[in-house]
Image 1 (cartoon, rainbow, N blue to C red):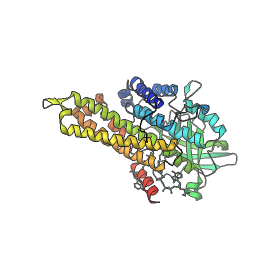
Image 2: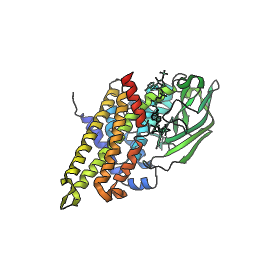
Image 3: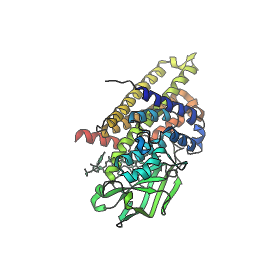
Image 4: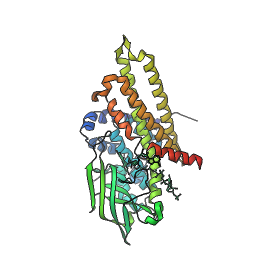
Length: 384
Ligand code: CAA
Ligand code: FAD
């Protein structure tokens, strides 16, 4: 067993770190406050090849492995989780879904520009539309319908909470075609935002990841050509679940980055701030908080890397991904809260960053399956 990173992995980690410090850190507080989408940052991610990291080069991607993706996600999330969620959705939900399950025409038409993150010089990213107002954790109970009309489908319904909802050009939409078949009646479609009948709702005003654009999307008699269905008739729910397993490694890495970024700030602050005649790092209770942070972060990182390694090596990673997500997200919530505590009153104001990280951490316990859903996935896997 070898825990060391390869030279290439170290280079990618460094490139992501440099990008985060030089491109994401400036303005991160203002983007959060004004809910400004990190457009320039995402355009630069495209230039770096970080929007289609695991897509093979002949499909427009960077041809890297999942370990590289975990390392890059951690570094960017240390500084800016609104940018990293956009990157995560495009890489591990949209591009992976098309790469693994799309046909050659779909890859040529959609995957290549999505992996490059640009088309005709403009930003070109995707979104993943599973959740609905009444179907979140209970994802099989899709109300959105896709009526089979022979050579095309007609989609009607509403999707909720869609990350990249307004910025994306391409949506992967899950909808029910055969309600009598339950989850086996669901299909996934590639839908272009510009098509008639697609309407983007108002932007959600959120607790955290406020730079990320989250919208509801409605579909009214949207005509979708049959060739835009992904996989065989009824494959849509399995598509969603299998794709989400990889996505959960991305969100676990985002949580890991929030935790490790907050810990770095807490350590630096504890070396500067004096109380009772000494730097607060010299008080044992602060030392033990740092020790617990480092231990939990190390465990979270190992879970993320193990799940990524299993995916890279063709092993089943569904439960490992769920374990990484639930553990890393709970670590992120705990570490960021303790980082605010170590900063005292200064932690409660925006200039010190940790209050934003605490707000951002909360979403990692909710999206791509709540912590409760991850525990269902893990326990079903163990007890089956
Ligand atoms: N791979 C393949 N098939 C799978 C699967 C997987 N990982 N998980 C489930 N399935 C199959 C099941 O085998 C079953 O098929 P059969 O009937 O042939 O056996 C079918 O799918 C239905 O599965 P379940 O009976 O297990 O379904 P359930 O209703 O009990 O729900 C659940 C299971 C794990 C809770 C699931 O619905 C779930 O993951 N919910 C959370 C939804 C979620 O993660 N949403 C995220 C939206 S995207 C997002 O959030 C992006 C973002 O923020 C950035
Ligand atoms: P519910 O499913 O209503 O759950 C409410 C509570 O009940 C939760 O604590 C849940 O864990 C618990 N619960 C439910 N069922 C059970 C059970 N059987 N046992 C125990 N506890 C249970 N979705 C997308 O499709 N695409 C996106 O891009 C996307 N981005 C998002 C971005 C943001 C900022 C947010 C807030 C959400 C996003 N989502 C997205 C939706 C997200 O995946 C859902 O919010 C999440 O899956 C939970 O669904 P829900 O909100 O309907 O909660």
